[in-house]
Length: 254
Image 1: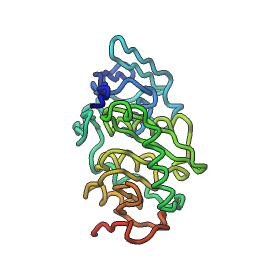
Image 2: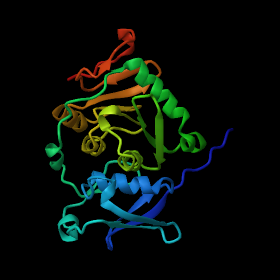
Image 3: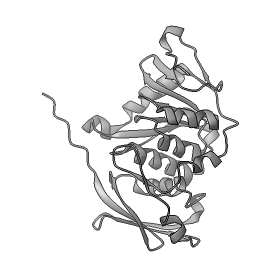
Image 4: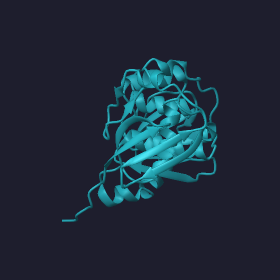
């Protein structure tokens, strides 16, 4: 019997401008990317220049962040907390109705389905923690040249925050990027993708009804069950071209 290593998770306290936001269960890898991605997703920063410094202290299990501008902690932290529906038990402070104010996607690259499936396969090959433990989630972005960048974490939301943080730090254009994830595309997950501006989101598993409704509202292409030569489109805005035989593409009922 082959034995795999166990995935790691650690409680890490996020402190912003001296205020404790929350304690998160995280994998101790690419934590600075996670900070930028989480703060961006929560609306606490608009770009990388809004962050003056990030100090990760693994001994104390804390991350100290200093923003370039003051923010109103009472306004932020008096909001009702929403615990995300996923592993790693993430927490968000934005209202589930806030996302309706996000900018609708009007542009985006067009992708052949065969390319997306190929990138999903390459994504799996470039996920070392999953290959080692079998118990990690991952998220990746594919740029216009087909280059893949992968981030992994015990929590699927954390993995998406990490890859968004990478994109924010590197000032990448969301219209040129494809987002792929191993996890279920929930309402919260789709909200993170929408906040950054991804036009196409793909997953190896399902999307929830609420995520699909939000994707339709914001004009985001969502495709699930990317496995082998099969996939299920949940929304259709003309950004994914089925260049495979029709029987390989499932159809999600409206």
